Length: 120
Image (tube, rainbow, N blue to C red; front, side, top):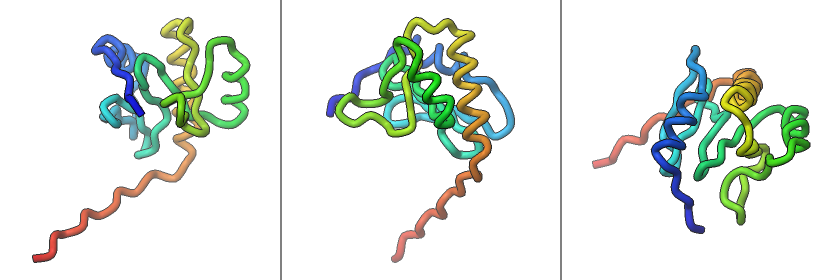
């Protein structure tokens, strides 16, 4: 599976669309970037596509908008995620990213696994 590349402009745009707030982080993910709240990912960048993980009702609403579609590699899209239409304005994209954040913020915080110590 070949991973498409994103541009520095794609990454900068993604970062500009994610609002700051408690528990929110933007972290590298598989050569790209993802937005997390309390350790749970709610938005990501794949090539130039921005994807969101939202409630089932919100995803159904988004799926009805022309230009939305699967998010991730075509041969293995991410379940429970959709790409935002490329024609969305920054304001539209921010609104959907925020809806995804609000939904994912209701999940329990992800607990970091303790690092295994090396046995000598």
